[in-house]
Every structure is written in C-alpha cells, then in structure tokens.
Image (cartoon, rainbow, N blue to C red; front, side, top):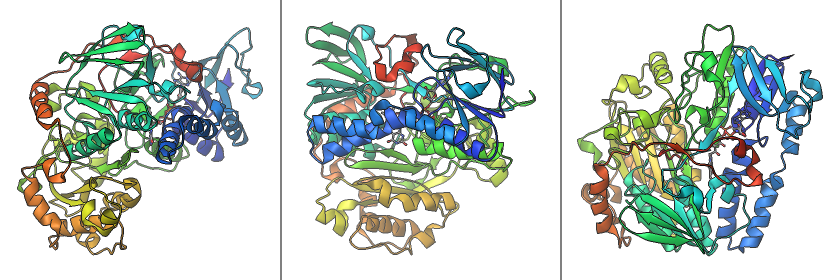
Length: 600
Ligand SMILES: Cc1cc2nc3c(=O)[nH]c(=O)nc-3n(C[C@H](O)[C@H](O)[C@H](O)COP(=O)(O)OP(=O)(O)OC[C@H]3O[C@@H](n4cnc5c(N)ncnc54)[C@H](O)[C@@H]3O)c2cc1C
C-alpha cells in the first residue's frame, strides 16, 4: 500500500498535465498509465496525423513522411516523457488502474513493467498488483475507438486511426469509414500520397456536426485531392477477398480495397475502472459528468474528491484536455477555478482547414430567427446533444449525433452551475430548453479578399453567429487556409464577450484573410455595405451553387438526405476484437466496443 495525495488514472495529455502541475504545487502524486506516457495525441493521433499532412503538403514521398513522423513521435518511445514526469516529482506507475474503494486504486502492472522503487508498494515481478491510496483522484483515461455494426468486420484487414498512424504501410486502395475530422484528415493525407481512397459516410455530408457549408466545401476539396466521397449510405457488410476486402453499402454499392480504416467513432474509456464503487453508474458511450470545476458529479460525501479531465469527459481535443487539466490542478491546489466552454476551438487540419468555435445555428438552446438566413445544420448543432451521453439523448429527433463538440459545458450539472454563476442562458442546455439565444448569421467569402484573390482561393468561406439579444459573438465557422490562425481573434471575442460593435471597428491588415472577418463583423454590426450583405440575401436559398463549386453528386446527395433524415440509428452495440499492432499494445488489453458515435 502506497499513500499519495493525488492519484492520476491515465497518462495522456490531461493526466500528464494535471500530475505535473499538482506535483509542482507540493502534492505527492502517482500517475498510472497502461500504455504510452503522453497518450494518444503525441504518438497516435494529433502529432503523427499533422506531421503526415504537412509532409503531404510539402510534396514529400511517403517514405520520407514516415521517417519524419517517426522523428516527431520519438519512435513511440515514451521514456523521455516518463523521465520528465519523474523530474517533476511525479511517481510514474506503469499498469492498469482500477478503483477498488473510495480512496483506493489497485494497479495491475503490465507483465514486463519495472517495479517503481519509490512507490513503496507491495508489487514485485511475481506479484503484479499494487495498491495506492489518495485524497484526490483524477480520471483521465481518454477515449477508445468504436465502430458501427458491420457484418464481417472482424474478418477483414481493418485499422483503427491509431494503427494507421503508426503503420509504415501505404495502402494502394483504402476505404475510410467516417466523415468526421479524423476521417477527412486521413482521407486527404492518404490520397495526397497516392492511395486510391474512398471515404464512406452514412450521413448526407461530411463533418455532420458543423454547419452544412463546411462539409460541402471539404467534400469538394477531398474530391479534388483524388478521393471518392460516398455520402448518405451506411456500410452494412464486409468480406475478406484475395486482395483485401469488399465493403457493401446499403444502397447496393460494393467497394474493393486493400484495407479499411475505421474513423467512425470513439467513446470515453470508462470500462473496467470500477466507477461503481464511487456510486457512479456508467453505460457504454457515456462520458463522465463533471461540474464546471471538473469534479465528477455525484461523487461527493465519500471523504475523497474525484476529478476528471480530457476525452473521458466528452471533450475531443488536446487543447480542451489541457484546459480541463489546468482547471483540475488549480482546484486540487485550493485555487477555485471554473471551466468556461463557450469558446473551445474545433479544428480539422485538412487543406483547406476547418475551424469552428462556440455555438452554431441549430445547436442546443439556439433558435434561428428571421435574421438568420438559412438554417444550416438545423439538427446538427454541436450543443444539441453532444455532451456526455450525447448518443443517448433525445435531441435530433432520436438520431444519434455523430460529432461530439463542445459549445457548452460537457454536462448538465456543469451547465446548470455555469448558468447560475453567470446568469447566462447560453451556458446552460438545461436552462435553454431549446429556446436559447437567437443567432444572427453573417457570411463572407475568402475569395472576395485580396489575399483570397492572390491565393486563388475559390473555396474559402466563413460564417459568424451573433447573439441577437446581447450583441456579442456566440460562434463562428471558417473554411480556408490555416483558418485556426486567423480565426483565433474570434475565439478571444467569444470568450471575452466583446460586443460586435467593437469588433467591427477592429482594423485588419491588408492583404489578409482577416479582411473577410471584417466584412462579416460589419455585416453583423449593421455597418456593412460589403458583398457579404448581398451574399446573405442569396444564401437564403442556395448552398453549393453560390460557391461556384462543382457538385456532380448534388442531386444524389439530396435524395439520400431525405432517406436518411427519417432514419433512427439506435444501432445495437457489439464487441469486436481488433488486431492491434504493437505500437498500441495497451489497447490489446481493452475490449474495443462498437457503436455509432463519431466525434473524431
Ligand atoms: C486521429 C486523431 C487525430 C486527432 N487530432 C487532433 C488534433 O489535431 N488536435 C487536437 O486538439 N486533438 C486531436 N485529436 C484528439 C486528441 O488526440 C485527444 O483529444 C487527446 O489525446 C485526449 O487526451 P486525453 O488525455 O484525454 O486522453 P489520452 O491521450 O487518450 O490519454 C488517456 C490515457 O489513459 C490511459 N488509460 C486508459 N485507461 C487506463 C487505466 N485503467 N489505467 C491506466 N491508464 C489508463 C491510456 O493508455 C491513455 O494513454 C485527435 C484524435 C484522433 C483519434
């Protein structure tokens, strides 16, 4: 038995950050990690993915790109990360943790993991468990891949995103299942390196959680990169063939490929953690409900405190994990801090990239009024039912929402708390009850700016959403080159609640894409005489056509939309074993469940 002030379960972005911060604040800390110290982002998700995308953009050959990726991910060697933690005063314990009682965690060590000398526990190579006690527990176990029920899936050569991003193979023909951010990024990446890629998305458009224009533009960009984009038809059956596999879609299409890449969903990793002993009932797919202080709701009164940070709470980005980790660390160290989820960026690092932040029309508690123009994604809002347990909520007419995005606190409790603290309706899906702020939309095309003209940018576009009641920005979505960079001022504006009237007076450098922002902001402030005003009038009826982009499958997409719209997707879950490569060895010990959620 070893006693610590704080035990952190999971050593990914969130866990490492909390552990380092609270150790720096003088607490004794143990961090328990079943796989790689540093988690998914550094080795198997963000960094390898962005490294390969950048290599593709530079026109490097695949072999050079793989070599660069190996450099970036340190050859999947986490010893430097473990040493950094040790130097920070954190006791690193390699193994799988399980809560056995309030205040106690049992760690089952991986077979070959060294026994930590300073742990003072009872572990040895012969006896592979050790018990830790804590006053504060931080659950930061991330999320795990899930996939839809497809007959024969376990018999075909399939990759999770982690497996693809650690493989040296470049499949000649690849099917990417899922048109969320990861599916789009990996489609573009493999297509750029010469793979013949078919992306299959059951929804009628890519990025189903964002306003329609974003996914529509991305579909054009991916097709230009050579990918075949199949929208609005669900994959139903997979069969192994001599060359790989054949995937059958419900519309009768059959697609051959060497490999299938599953980017069709992930869920918070809560199985086997022993949460029941803390009085928590969890069902597969749900996220840990947290307060705005990131304390796990419903765990009070047990003499210990339980916190959560990262994907396990239903967030989906590294920066969100880090932000929550900061909040948890501050609270553990006695500095009261609450998370504000009003402006967490959502990014897709394709070319053009997609950047979204805050609320979108049709999101939870957001009503679209007369000044709103069209109503893109009326049932696709990130706030609609994307929080923890999003897939179980009644939103979207009973449909399973596919991208989990935070435009609100990631739990009802958190939302209620935030609303009570700040008196804001938009912070609380509970308070909103579907009748939140009315959003007014303004639009601009990057092609109307000098930078867009110089860059021959025919696709870029942005939409800003202002709260008609308060006159502040509530959300934004942009598609364009490196959109995250020039849209960051919008993130600040939403978070700081800067009035649109002030934003419209901000001077943007010439020639930059910021001028498109200026156009839309002036439109919102009612001072614009720009093309955006005319654009807004036109936009009430059109979508793709006004963008001057070729839409060969336009009609077909619309037809499929009608079919899909009435469909309930409460698909049964089932467990399917994956072949997981050695780079993701920890995954082998965990069952990979399948369901129909998709948020990365
Ligand atoms: C393909 C892909 C690309 C992405 N790209 C981006 C991007 O560009 N930008 C971005 O912001 N986000 C991106 N993300 C999301 C980002 O990777 C996650 O949001 C982030 O990694 C979450 O960090 P975390 O600490 O919550 O979880 P993780 O990094 O997953 O860490 C959780 C850790 O807990 C460990 N663990 C689990 N259970 C136990 C247990 N019982 N005992 C001990 N340890 C346990 C796991 O082994 C794991 O290491 C991407 C995701 C994917 C899949």
